[in-house]
Structure formats: C-alpha cells, structure tokens
Length: 84
Image (cartoon, rainbow, N blue to C red; front, side, top):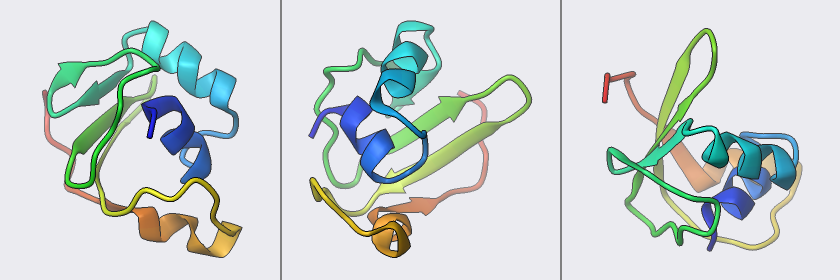
C-alpha cells in the first residue's frame, strides 16, 4: 500500500492530498529514509512523520485498504520518539 494512502486510511492525516504534500515537503520517513508519496509501505516498517511542533514515530502493524474509524488505530503502534 502506498504511504500516502496508509496515512489517510490509518487516520494519521486527514486527507490523502495532505499526506502527499507532507511527503513532497520532506516530512515523511520510512526506516529512516525519506520517501515519496508512491512508496509502498510494508508491515513492520517504522514510519516517522515530522510536524512543525512534534514528531510521530510508529510501526506499521497491518495493511487494509478500508477500515472503520474505531479500527484505524489497530493499523499501527506508536513508538517512543527518536531522532532520525
């Protein structure tokens, strides 16, 4: 699954276009490597998403194209924040 779609489906970012813009702005890293919106994320990948005021680090647990709002958090596990 593409990283931009995963960020939207997991409800980490509100829209897919916002996820694409974050990738193009060099704010998304997978396994400590900067990625483009079309990068295919896999189960077990460590994703880092940088915001202006904080950074989110999480591990991908599941890839599902459609999930209910209450099940979205089951797609990933938050990890302690580490600098890249």
